Image 1 (spheres, rainbow, N blue to C red):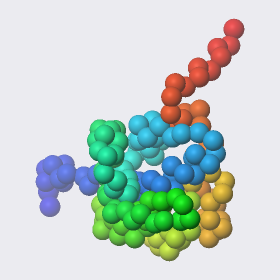
Image 2 (cartoon, rainbow, N blue to C red):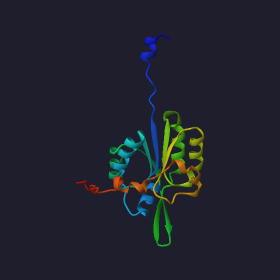
Image 3 (cartoon, rainbow, N blue to C red):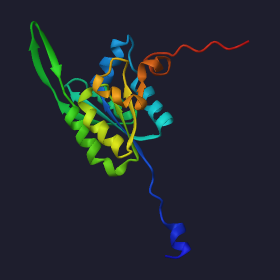
Image 4 (cartoon, rainbow, N blue to C red):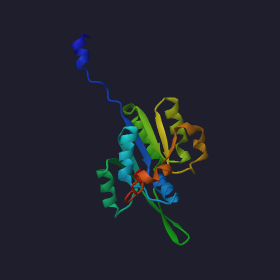
Length: 181
């Protein structure tokens, strides 16, 4: 191969992907007492971790089409899971467990990313996270708060808690920081 050919070869782009368990993230942040702004979160992922593709796994509920459109406009690739309505006492709970889909997509996309960022505190992702660590493919595990699964404790050096970023990521107007005189 001559030097001209080498200079014209396209370099393989190094990409980072995020795989987001939307329910775990949303409920975990709400437990911390605030609401996540998904648009700000997408920008944060792009700027902080150089995330090229952010897969958001979410249960599909009729009537939420505007939400799904807004999430796509913010830059998420949405992966829908059918939901189930489960009656608990007098309430109906909507369940859309996305764990299998998240793991499957992380493995389908495995050759296409340099690092994977998993947004969830769910211990069901232990085997995926362990595999990514063993193969030097884990960027961070973005947990919603400090109450993530004890199965993830051994990955503590990869944990980044999102509740500590409330001022940057909360929904609504951010309060400006006071200026020094």
